[in-house]
Amino acid sequence: MGQKHEKAAGSRATDPIGIMSEELARLRFFEGVPGWALERLAGSATKRRLEQGALVVQQNDEARAAYFLLSGAVQVLVYFEGVGDLLMGVHREPGSLIAWSAFLDPYRHTSSMRCEEATELLRMPRDTFEEIFEEDPYLGYLILKKVAAAMDNRLEGAITFLESSANPGEL
Image (tube, rainbow, N blue to C red):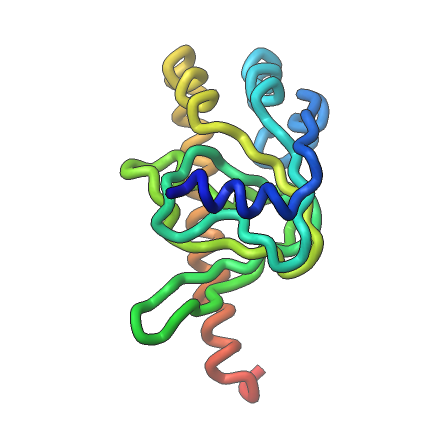
């Protein structure tokens, strides 16, 4: 099921491009990550350029990878029965972790993500993170702390976004 959506997004993307560990080291999320781990992550990571309207991930699909925003904007959508997709926020900050369900059992996306404009993303397979976590559990702990901070940031952002959407005249 998840593969279908990744292919759908991929069909609207340019061919994936690799990334160098030096590029990863410049992203705030990867500050403090040792060189050996950056090399391993960079070796499995791919950059993807997606068109406006392309799906990045689909809610409830298997999360095989984490995604980081390099440029552009990605909408976070949550589907509710009888209501449809509710816009929960928009990611615009380059380098931010935008899809982290690959870190959390049961490894299912809790929201859909759609490109609001032409967007460049970094896709990093879950398996590579799991190998690094096994090799260096303390590093795994530090990375998961960063994932938790990204989750907290999105929740705070969603609350602010929804409050401003519900009461646009109050701002």
